[in-house]
Image (tube, rainbow, N blue to C red; front, top):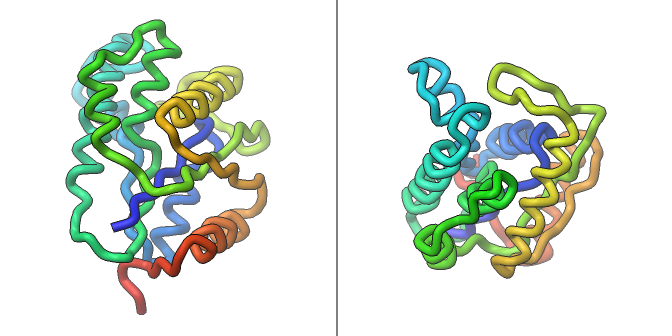
Length: 188
């Protein structure tokens, strides 16, 4: 099963793009980070990026690895992940807590298909909310750390243009068509 990841800056439209791909009948995997933040807020937990960054990093990595491992059934149907375990490694570098060797080994044992799609920082659509409390400057650093981490892991990166959501979906499906013919997971 081809597994593709969409990474990039916080607030750059990744989740909107994932939702649009799901509407096109592709299998998608939501971002673990926002799920963790929502759960921690509901349970009054502390594994939050503004309280216990190392605990957040660890949960982010574990959830992202589990999501990757749970996506099975080898077929030619593409699956799109909203971020991945590589982001946990990138986040560790941002907070001054390098990923332990065990994380690096677990990440190296799992590979996404090429290319990795990257959403660059986009100030015009960037917003904050209860789960995203950081500013745009943090989003730029997030983007830079993610690009560095994916490149260090050996991935080919393709930047998604800052265009309408329909054009972004067309860009991705066009990229896939050039690689091979991948069909949506639930063709109509």
